[in-house]
Image 1 (cartoon, rainbow, N blue to C red):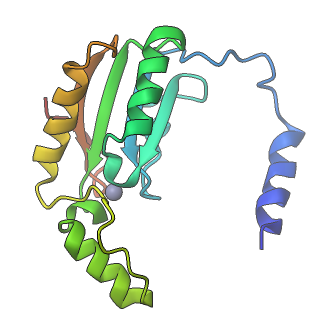
Image 2: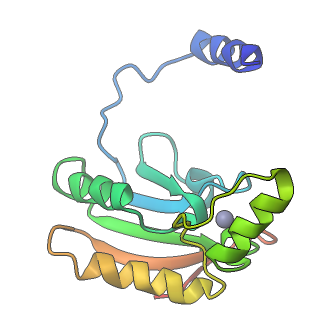
Length: 160
Ligand SMILES: [Zn+2]
């Protein structure tokens, strides 16, 4: 089931030349974005491996673990700016938690009733909430902005 991935890694390792790359973010940026397969956060900003800390969540929402990563990143891993990156056509913005739970129940019968998913039909409100939450967190030592990536054009718009 995973043979293709191991074969892919074997090819990757053949020309691997990043052994001396530091673990810090060379461009001093942390990017929080959705797990959507259409998003290549480094490419979106014309960055390369080693330039940024990438944290991915469903919907690109701020979660407790993401916050911890950004706090640590802003103090010791070279992050002094953070992009909260939402995107158009995001499944997590297609409805509220109840509608996502219902979609999953209908898909294969799995019952996630009561689970906090973090989806919201008002994606921009969610983005701004997360941006403001980070800005008001005294433990986050970085500038924070919100952006929206358009999956149909490749362009990013600064929201706030
Ligand atoms: Zn998404």
